[in-house]
Length: 296
Image 1 (cartoon, rainbow, N blue to C red):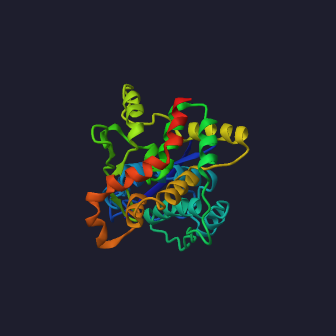
Image 2: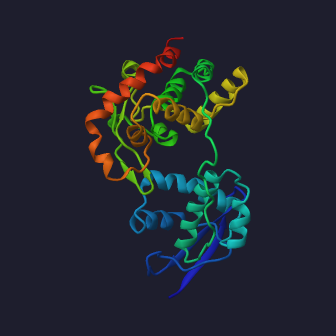
Image 3: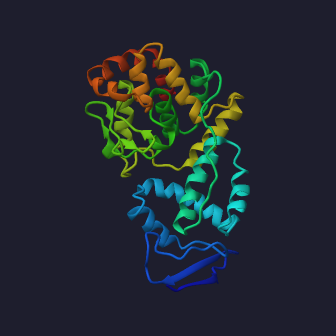
């Protein structure tokens, strides 16, 4: 079996690898360990058809893969480990590792680097109601404020909520129903929407976008940075989800809070349907002061 690697400058101080060969094996490429800038089209096809990775997940992989190719450019486990070491947060490290591990597997090269333990150790402290309210009022874009508010009122993860589409929202009955319910280690489950937010969402739906929140991660980050400078307190998106968990568990049944957060529950999760909305409405009453931030 013969393969050919050639490099060509693209005018942006980076190289593109063109690989031509007869297709053989699941990866469809010869193993390569040096001079790599990625055969991204073949990699994408392999991820979708062989590894059965969702397109949305693959988009996240490509962010890491492109960054690795631009900054390292070689399938070298030692250099990969050094590159990953700059990501100090365990979750960021793991997310990049998973993507790069797929790239190495595609080219038939082993990457034996273990994921970091991203579980919280010790007590998880969440912001208070007053802190969340003052932070939300400092967010200068109302659509971003609604997104951040929903993070404080729902158990859904920040990245998934930002990608939410209108086809996954039932405004008649007040539910978010994600299409990708069970994605490997993460569970995205139907979520009751706070009743006072439904009308705000209906107004947003007048836009022509398929997505509920038609802005990018960078927009959220910049709005949050301006709010941090105004309030003097750094509240992250993950902190808003922690707020939901700590606040909800004081008013709702524990297993329902766990279910809404997407945590594994075993067989008990199949018997919660009749009580979810009833339990959620107990929580909804306690967070009305936060909803008022949308009227300022």
